[in-house]
Amino acid sequence: MRGPVRAAYGLAVNARRSRYLDVGLATVLAVMAQLELWLGERYQGMPALPGNRVLTAVLLLGGTVPLAWRRRWPLGVFLATIGSLSLMLLVQGAGEFGGGFLILLVVAYSAGAWGAALWPVLGATAVFLAVYTLRDPNVHTVVDALYPVMFMAVGFIFGRILRQRLRRAVQAEAGTVEAVAAERARLARELHDVVAHSVSVIVMQAKGGSAVLATDPGRAREAFTTIERSGRQALEELRRMLDLLVHDPAAAEDRRAAPGLARLDDLVRATRDAGVDVAVTVDGEPGRLSEVADLSVYRIVQESLTNVVRHAGAAHALVRLRWRADELEVSVRDDGPGVAALDLPSSGRGLVGMRERVAMLGGTLVASPHHDGGFEVCATLPLPETE
Image (cartoon, rainbow, N blue to C red; front, side, top):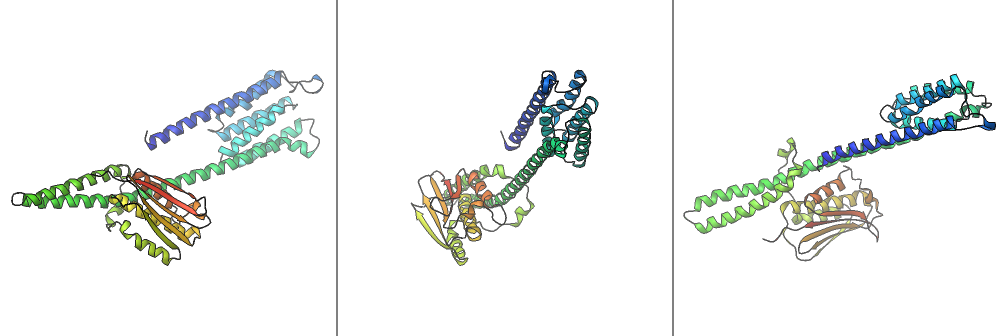
């Protein structure tokens, strides 16, 4: 299941679960209110709610059933619930209705979390407060009058807090998606350069091989061997490129040669000039890397050292390359206080770009504080099979 389909399915499942939750909550509150109406008693055997019970039951349903739609129409549900309870107080009078406070808490929370308008909520609350104060004989002080409003205020405030958190989460998600899209566009340009190089080699070798096929079969055979090797490499990179294809007009503007491990010394020298002492260690016998993998390793080290210079507050850094039979492990560790764990480069795309590169190559990446202090970025990339 691909990303957009999975995301749409997840949204549908969450919406369905939220719907069931709201219906269940409305049902529970409606049943509790009816039980309190018909079975509840207050002091000295008096009913919990005065007046005609049938009319009160209908008004209580009007105050609880709309809660099943509290996410979809939060303001309408708030007005319907507060209106029904206000009408009940106005017509029937007030009583010892404890469940009403719970209903007020839930409907105010829903209006705060999913409603945008504020003035209708304040207006309906003022009307309810006036009716409650006039019709409840137990209201003797300001605290008594404001008691139900305190429940509503607490619910509304917590709802607003949830609303702000959801908004920040949506903004963070949008920023991550934008960063991933921009990074994929950049990766697509670099992959284009690699594939274009392989195809150019194929074209040139095919032209030369066909020219000497009759006069120099040996040279023609070498040309065809080169064509086969370049074609395999191009197919390998094309398979990895399928998920990154984007329409980017800037792709034709960047045709510089992609850097690799051969330029690692220049990168280390530039970092030392910036004030961080960098050491490089190589373990094992260096193996063969595809051009995309070579470029990705260079970019991972470059981004890691850039974060060390900008954010880690470190004086020393260690770049280690561990060559194994079937994989390459590249790690960059600093001795800073660990600020780099926040991954906050100026573009906001450092760690996102590393993860995209490593995932594209079928590897793994871990970025976390080191148990001995400092911060470490460690990527493991598989090596191509030996031909």
